[in-house]
Length: 368
Image 1 (cartoon, rainbow, N blue to C red):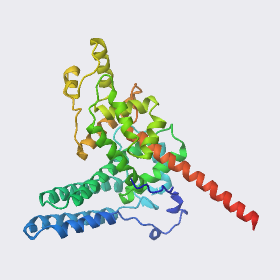
Image 2 (cartoon, rainbow, N blue to C red):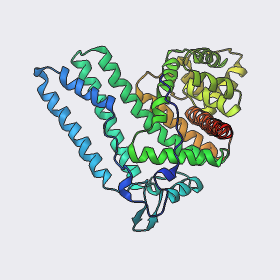
Image 3 (cartoon, rainbow, N blue to C red):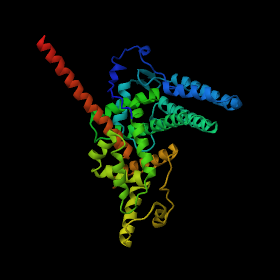
C-alpha cells in the first residue's frame, strides 16, 4: 500500500470568517479522479468496433453521471455559510450538530440534502465501474486493466463504508473531542466531494484483510482461525499489524474481530461455543454451523465487494443495537476500530511534527 501522509484539515481553512466569500471554496463533486479518468479512457480505446452498442450505452452512463454531479452541485455547499429555509448553516454549526446529536436509528432525514444525494451519486458511479469490469472481462481485455477497474470499484465501496464509520465514531464519547471534530471535518469533505484520501489509503488494507479472511477455514469452537488471521496480518500492512498488536487484547476489538472472521454475530458465536462445550466437541467446519445453530447462516462468502458490504452492514446494525440496548458484545465493527486507530495515530503524529517544527524555529530564532 502507498501510504500517503495524513494532513489534518482545519475547518477554518474553508470558513475562517463569518463573511468569507463563497467563491473561495471548491464545492464540486469529484466525478472521476485522474486514475479513474485513465481507466475510462483505456476501456474506450480498447473496445473493438464490434462492440459499438455497448460503448454507446457506456458513454451515455458516463454523461449521466456528469449531469447528476452537476445537479447535486447546485445544492448548498457544506463548506460555506448557507442561508436555508430553517435558518443559517455554517460548517461549524453542522459539525457541532453532528458531534452533539443523540439521535438513534436512521438519521437520513436529519442529514444535509447534499450528503444524501451524493451517496446516490457514489452508488451510481460504483455500479458504472462494476459494469466496466464486466464489459472488460467479456471483451477479454488485459487482466491488469480489469484488476485496476475492480480495485477502483472496491475503493468506492469503502467510501460508502467510511461514511457509516465516520458517523459512528463522531458520536463515540469515548474518543477525544479533537478526534471527533477531525472525524466530522473528514465527513464534511467526503460529503462535499465524494472523495477521501484517508479511505483511499486505508481501503487496500481492508481489502487485503477481507481476501485473507475468505481464504481461511477457521475451526468454529476453538476459534483457531483468529490466530491464523493474526499471523497473516503481520504480512499484510504495517498499520494493520500495529493495530493488531496494540488493540486485539481489548474485549470489544477481539469480539468484533471474531464477528468479522466467522461471519456470524457475537450472539451466535457465544451460543455455538456453549453448544460445542456441552457436547464435548472441539471444533466444527463452516458447513456445519447452520445445523448446530438450527438456522441457516451464511458463513462462507466470496471476494465480491457486495458480499463485503452486506456483511459489514449486518455487523454495523448489530453493533448499533447492542450499544443502544447496552447489552454485551461489540458496540463497534472492526472497521470502526481500525479506521479510528489509524486516524488517531495520524493525528498524534501530526501533533508531534508540529511541536518539532516549533522547536526548530525557536532554535533557529535563538541562534540568529
